[in-house]
Amino acid sequence: MMDTETLYELVIVILAIFMTLLYFYYKKKVCVLKLHNTQLEQLSQYDDLTQIFNRRYFLEIVNYHFKIIHQKNSSAIMMIDIDNFKQINDTYGHLLGDDVLKYTVKQISENLREDDIFARYGGDEFIVFFPFISKKDIHTIAARIQSKLEEHKTYDFPVTLSMGICVFSTLSPLINIIEYADNALYLAKSKGRNRIEFY
Image (cartoon, rainbow, N blue to C red):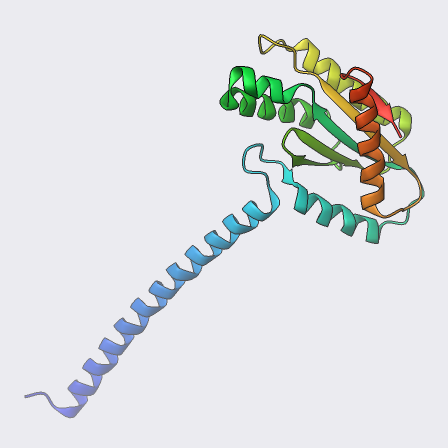
């Protein structure tokens, strides 16, 4: 039979083991929850296919940017559309269409500045916010993107882009600026595609 002191020590050891196991169990749970939260945050901010920002997060971050900047120089919004993308999907299939989306995103990304904010706006449309840029500089970037796509004959068909740009120097509501850039995009498409148009 155990004396009281030995029994007390045994209970303390068992409690210590239990508390240690409980600590590691909860530590593991917290790590799993943090991982899940990171994954959820990733899903809420990025487009799953192209791995660039999604529309919702783009609007959130650019609206925040509008609140903190005091506009002294011009900035711009560019809307981009892959020309004849529906026809590419219908003719070659959605897997190749997805590949064209990823390829196009890569070409655009490689030609943007570090501070530019690039997102998938929906389907085959993309949007870029260019903080503090001139009309001349944004035209140079847009032309370079088009040129890079034309240089790389990756597919049996041409991949071209129509671009609509709104350069602004006073802070209007973001939704209005996007609408102006979208109007310029519509103009680029109506004039034959593979064009850069300004609002």
